[in-house]
Amino acid sequence: MPRQTLTTLRRLKEAGEKICMLTAYDASFARVVDDAGVECILIGDSLGNVIQGHDSTLPVTLDHAVYHTECVVRGAPQSFIVADLPFGSYQVSPEQAYASAARLMAAGAHMVKLEGGMPMLKTVRFLSQRGIPVCGHLGLTPQSVHALGGFRVQGQQPDARALMLEEAKRLEQAGADMIVFEMIPASLAAEITAAADAITIGIGAGPDCHGQVLVLYDMLDVFPGRKARFVRNFMAEGGSIRDAIDRYVRDVKAGKFPAPEHSFR
Ligand code: KIV
Image (cartoon, rainbow, N blue to C red):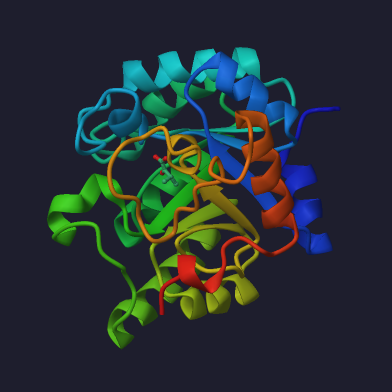
């Protein structure tokens, strides 16, 4: 199969076919995810939690992200590769963001992801005008977990909802081709998606985004501890890692995942 590109992903969106994304951090898992037909692989800074054992994503450095991106790219010949810009590697200035993003792109990423709305518009424009595809990330943004007061649903109050609608639109106008929405009401994700040119990807954002993402180690239940409401343990239903990922792809494509019990109001 030829590699997924922004063009093939946009075609899926236009055709109404759900887009599957999973995280991966190494070549072996990336190979299984890629073989299973997951269109996008995210080298998430969740690697700080699931690979490094930290209780947040904040200690992840650009060197870590570059290393894991190189590993994943070697294992994934078909997927579209999105790499997270880690905390502290892009917030200072658009120039700092460009220098960091350039390292991830040179490592083999096809797009970089950054967290935040209004304060990031200039940076998103700067990167996209210079040929670096950008994925935004709104809602629960884990790099701001301390400012947000913990891992909680975002966009539930009318003013927060209105702000997120505006931020999504402005990110898109600044050049973001994809936006991840984490832990927001399903109705808000549906409203944003209905008006979006960018590809919307949900995690705890209901069934109506153009695509879905989960942290691989959560959906395979290898990461210990209590799971967020939006996580389904696909390993409990399948006999192997490959079977669990196949089931994820099947259920996302069929609109069966996420179900109401994985969503927020
Ligand atoms: O770091 C990550 O894995 C992410 C996903 C949760 C979207 O940003």
